[in-house]
Length: 270
View 1 (tube, rainbow, N blue to C red):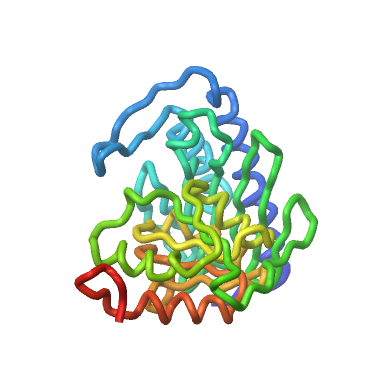
View 2: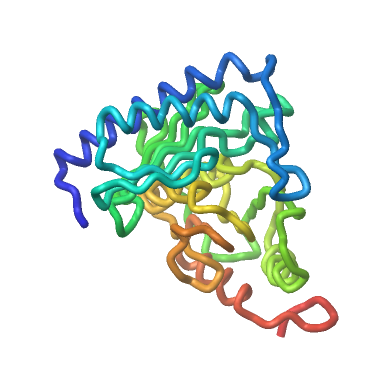
């Protein structure tokens, strides 16, 4: 399904409204008081009253403005609409960063046309940074941004949120087969590291286990900045799973080739 330029502009303006509303709910909680719970779906899976308040206000706005649209959100799950379009919300991507007072978290808003996420916003209201993409272009606070060219893995900087996120030894070995050849590996960042790929500060992000609401807002931003987003096997990343993002298509192919190699018993690849 394709949107007209007029429709896309209307939806993007509304996505900004959603991000504004979510940020207004979240900021009073940041580095202040909030309720914290462990959802218990992993070793520690935190959710705060800020997460819930932000998703709730965005859902109410969507229901009022576009009652036929569906919604997929991290905290309240899926609400199927009568049309193909649906909004994908992660009210605070990086809740662990949020609860430790580190501003490397963001509000993620995407609109999927039923086939692919067509627009995305990552908003960091504490630092006043908003990344926007529509697949054809990407912007930071209205300024066009581009990923950088880095066609050699040996010169690349790579990021990943946490080594604890790997779900198998095989997965971890494939990851290190890539990062052992890179110039630099850094952990942390959540959604912010993906934005740094779009901004040309980081060359790639490799994640082993994402949810759809973790990645859909980022796809139009990365692609709009000239980068590539796929699964580790080179497929469609919008449904999450093991995802790799690169600022340079040539680098992306090198990373995919290494991720596809079978790990050796000794821990390398062959």
